[in-house]
Image (cartoon, rainbow over all chains, first blue to last red; front, side, top):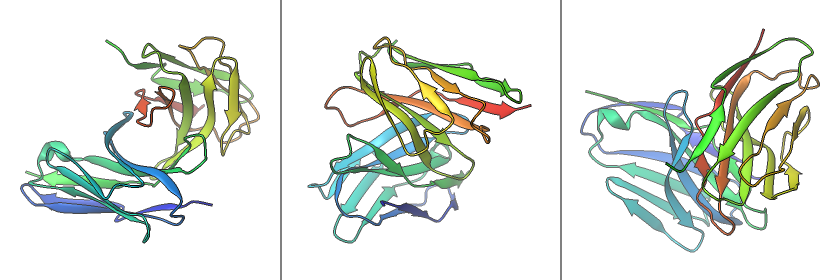
Amino acid sequence: KQEVTQIPAALSVPEGENLVLNCSFTDSAIYNLQWFRQDPGKGLTSLLLIQSSQREQTSGRLNASLDKSSGRSTLYIAASQPGDSATYLCAVTIAGSARQLTFGSGTQLTVLP
Amino acid sequence: DGGITQSPKYLFRKEGQNVTLSCEQNLNHDAMYWYRQDPGQGLRLIYYSQIVNDFQKGDIAEGYSVSREKKESFPLTVTSAQKNPTAFYLCASNPQGGEKLFFGSGTQLSVL
């Protein structure tokens, strides 16, 4: 069964710092991997989606990489801002699963002004 | 504005009571999903529907039921058989063949 792990569970950094969030998964037979942002008491917003054939995707200050063979993905946030404070979740779509996603438990990020 | 609307935002359930959570979307998406989120945990799939009048169980369907009579609507009923219903419930959708998921703002269900 696919398992997705995110470490650390919480991270606190000063404003302006570049940071990396980690995501690992146990089964490399994935269709794609997505990174989401969740603000407290809110739904999820999709940030980046990486297909299994891709190595990375970029959107503004965010860059997500995928190493399918090692079962790892990273989300790089450049020049962090207090508005980046949120929980970041990664999720993998299992190949042949009718688009069912398996989620990690998230990393709660706090960017201090 | 297009989007997914979940209601109510907060819901309280008494012992032995069934409650229904609403999810409506005007994005013309074919597929809809219900997830449960417990504190500090990832989302777990309860039910999903890829087309009207058809739905499939997810990983934790026991104690829940759904219907999909209209493309726009996918209500979730939490039955009295669900012994630990307190959680944050999220509805999501995506178009047929699409991969990016769109989420509603969630319903927090608590037991009185």
